[in-house]
Length: 268
Image 1 (tube, one colour):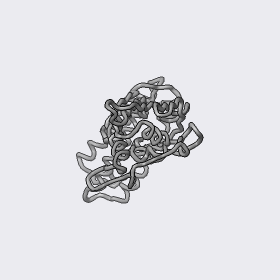
Image 2 (cartoon, rainbow, N blue to C red):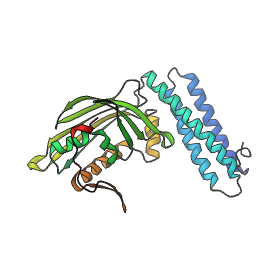
Image 3 (cartoon, one colour):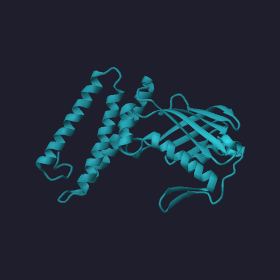
Image 4 (cartoon, rainbow, N blue to C red):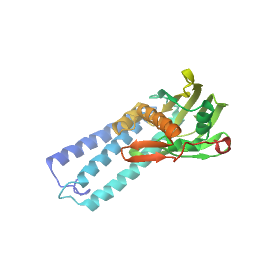
């Protein structure tokens, strides 16, 4: 196997390959022995991500056949995609809710509640301050299509969502439509801050990571912990509404050249 994928034979390589083989055998037995094997399927996805990391390390080594490693990497990427799609479908059909995450964060923004509400109500604004939201497309007055980075190996997860409750200048509630690959729901509330100091924005989200607890562990391993992301996104929203731009990192900025003002025409 080492020769086939272009890696020089060594005791270390042989040991790693044996461990990988044992892991795959264990995952296979787990899948076959369970009535609801979605966690074992997601364990395979986690193993695929680990394999990609090992192949990336091997690519930087000397005395290897990089063209073979590149071919093996492409094959593992394809397997990862298939495993992730199969796991997501099985998790959805089985109604598995294990590993569900509830996120709650709040922040004060020095803008009026109606201004903050209008900006959020236009869901196409979300990618401007939510780092992992790539795009939100309007489907109808209350429905939208989301594309979010955060799947295994950096995949983009997509689903359709609908607004279930909308009280102007007070709250917006949404959820993923039944049958979506991602089980996601949330509510954002807008309240006048004490002392007339703008708006208190509070967000609560319920979200089941692909693979439940296994998926959440993989996400944290690769720096995608959702509780950290929500807090950062709200800080970006505050920066964008108060100053007109978002500071992502030192020397890197994203946002508007002036504070945004949006109306109801482009809402989702």
